[in-house]
Image (cartoon, rainbow, N blue to C red; front, top):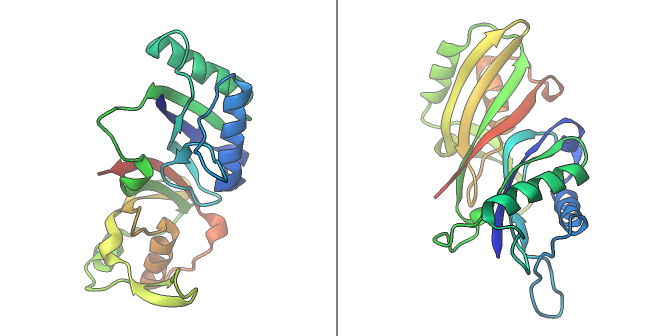
Length: 223
């Protein structure tokens, strides 16, 4: 049986890597008494995947993992799902919180990781001047160039990220903080929201210090 597990990643857990997170969740499933299914062949691996790897240091309220179990959840769908979420939350460390467990829709034949098209983020930075006009001018450029590491060559090149920006705006300001909201492409072609923010800071003539910025993923979009 295939299941979809939605969870939050916060606090110190933002510093755990993607691979370590998968290992941790797999171990929690086993400790809770569930048996993940494995692939066949010379090097079997668990049928478990996280839809969109979260960059190190980012928090999230919308992570999604799908896993195939050898045996369905006991107690029926609703009762078994509630029990599974409770058991996993009792095992997992602070900073990882299971929001829901549900059976995967049979109509979704592909993995969710193959269906990702974009993601939304909240970016919190130190207080900045009113930037609405600067954002409008920034987005009106024919090209928005930013340094990006090319996977095939390993070189850093200036690339046009404008086609990957689906939304970018100043959300609100309060106290000593400014909050941005953005939606960027993810999946086959993706854009790190910090790359977008750094390009905007450079265009607006603002000093960019990633140590003063926090990022939270709020939604993942699928085809």
